[in-house]
Every structure is written in C-alpha cells, then in structure tokens.
Image (tube, rainbow, N blue to C red; front, top):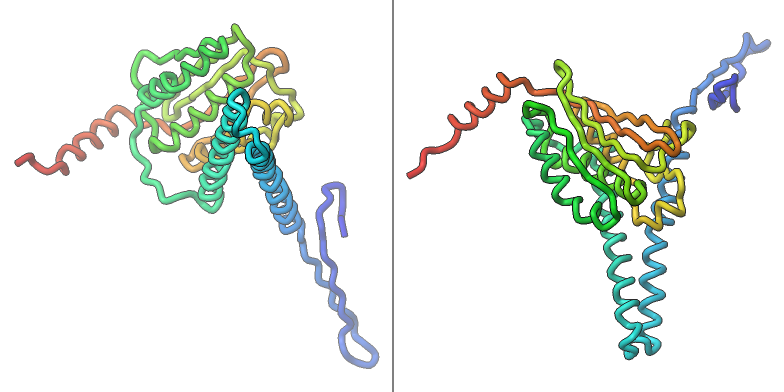
Length: 285
C-alpha cells in the first residue's frame, strides 16, 4: 500500500502470537519504495530498448524486402534503399555501443585509471571532428580557451565522450546561422566546462530529467535527427565517475548551457606526474 504524501510503497505483514488467549500480534512493515522504483526503471528500460532497436530493424527489413522483390534491378532507386539500410545499420551500431558503455558505467564504472588530461587538447580534437557537420548545417562551432592550459583529473576516453555528446547535441538542436561555443576555465580546485548553444532551448519541466537514459523532450524530432537517447546519460555518468557533476541551464527559444564540473590538476601535480613518467621510461638502446 502507499503511505503519506510521498507515495511510499509499504508492505504490511501481520501474525497473531500463539497462546490462549493470544498475547498480541507481530506487525512488520517493509519499505518497498526503492524496490518498486528499480522495477519501474527496469520495465521502462526494456520497453525503450525494444522500441529503439525495433525502429531501425524494421526499416532495414522493409528495404531488404523491397530490394528482393525486384527493386535491386532498378538503377534509379536501388541505391536509395541501400543507403537507407546503411544509415539504419549505423544508427543500430551507435545505439548498441552507447548501451554497452552506459551498462558498464551504471554497474559501478569501468576500471579506469584517472590521470592528468589536457582539456585544451581534447576540445581542439572535438572541434576539428565536428566542424564539417556544423558547417554543413550552417552552425558556427567555436572554442573560447582560457589564457593558460587546463588539466583535469579524468581519462581521455571519458572526456571525449562528454565533449562529443554535448557538442553533437548542441549542433543538432541549433538552427541554421546559430552558434555553438565550447569554453572552459579553472576555478581554484575545480574546472568548469561549458557547451553553450543558441538553439531551441529546454523548458523547465524537462531539465530535471534531461540526463535520464532515453529521455527526450521532443521524441519525434530526436529520432529524426538520429540520436540514441543515451548521450546525456553517458555525460552524467562519466562526470560522476570523475568525481564531478553535470548541470543544465536553459530557456525555450534562448539556447542551452550544459556545464560539467571536474577536478583540476595543479601545475605542480602535472609536472610531478610528467617527471615520474619520464623516470619510468626505459632508456633507448
């Protein structure tokens, strides 16, 4: 049964004590709220995964059947169906990769060795990789680096996952002639990384759930743009694995700012690690 305004789920067990007359009864209350929440999460996860896998598979099957029915000999249309199969296969592959990554992170995090990572270098690589897509969509993609290079306690794989997912999302939801800006700076012992866009924005009621897996503000638009629905959840889990957190500030029609807080590596610590690494390196023959 549900108890109180919070809707806590409580299981009640009652048993009469032996004796004539009975001296009383034992009443046991078990709080099942967390168990029920996890069960709902599992059901929602299975339902979402089934739907996300079914969509590209259905498209692939339909195209394959059309080709087998004779369209493969039609030089005008066969490449259209083959291209659709390729696109849906890539979407399916991306979904599976994200699911595997998220599963590892949610199970307690992979065994990663945290090290000093140059955030400037990671952003430069990310910008270079996403620039062709941004240019094709008419979106200006730019970086605002600080005066001095910034190092964070993380690992390269996780930082690239955070940057790639945030920048990719920002480009997708920013209209033509818009701007996506990546900026970062150190604040004492922490580093603040912002990905700012001039896109469509996110209303307040969606912001608390935006980092949940498969949560989409506009489901039809998200699928049209090719998202897996797992990118922001991966961002959140990577940030938490590094001892940081993910935040969002947005207003509909005025763009969004996704902020990642990470632990900074001081210049002295970074120099010590570099020195230690050089000492461990074997001499060249």
